[in-house]
Amino acid sequence: MVQKKLKKHNLFAINNIQMKKNILLLFGISIGVFMLTSCYHSERDPGYEYAPQMYYPVAYNPDQANPNFKDGKTAQVPVKGSIPVGFEPFGYENTPADYERAGAELKNPIALTPEVLEEGKVLFTNMCSHCHGEEGKADGAVVAAGKFPPPPAYQSEQLKNLSEGKMFFSITYGKNLMGAHASQLSKEERWKIVHYIQKLQKL
Image (cartoon, rainbow, N blue to C red; front, side, top):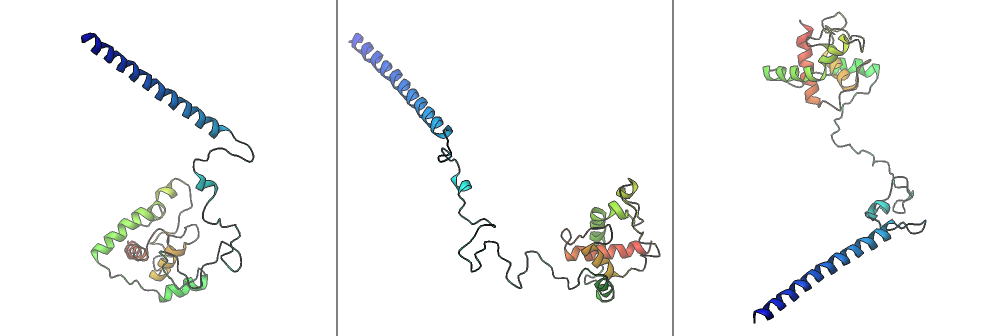
C-alpha cells in the first residue's frame, strides 16, 4: 500500500516537472517567434508596430490636404472675432501715439489699500526688482552684475512724474530693453504693481 502511494507521488512529481518544462519551452518559443517577427523588417514590411497610432495618426497633420474644408487645407485661420483663451482686450496698439494716449486716458481701476500695496510690492519684488532694484533706484542684481545698462530710476526727473497709464502700457507691451509682461502678469497684477511704483516715485 505504501509502495503504491510512493509510486503515485513520484509519478505526480514527474508529471509536474514535465509540465513546468513544457510551459517554459512554450514560453521560450513564443518569445523567440515574437522577437523574430518584430525584428524582421523590409521596405514593405516594417515588422510589428508597438504604437500604430503614432505611424498612422487619426487626425490630419497641419500641412496635410483636408477634404473636409472648402479650401482643402487642414490649418485654418481662426474665425473672425475669435478671442484666445486668457486674452484680455487692451484697446491700445503698441505705438508711440497710443503710449501717449494711454498715459492720458488710463486710470488705475483698483482702489489703493494697504493690502493691495503689499501685493504690489511682492509682485514688484518678484518680477521687476532684478533690474529696477528693491526701491526702484535702478540698482537691481542684473544691473549690478553688468549684464544690462540701468533703466531710469523711478525718482529721476524722467520717471518721477510718469503717469499710471504709461506705466501700465509699458508693463503690458515692454519698453526699450524691458520685455512685455502681459503674459506673465494679469491685468489686476499689473495695476497693483503700478500702485507700488507710484509709492517708489515719492522716495
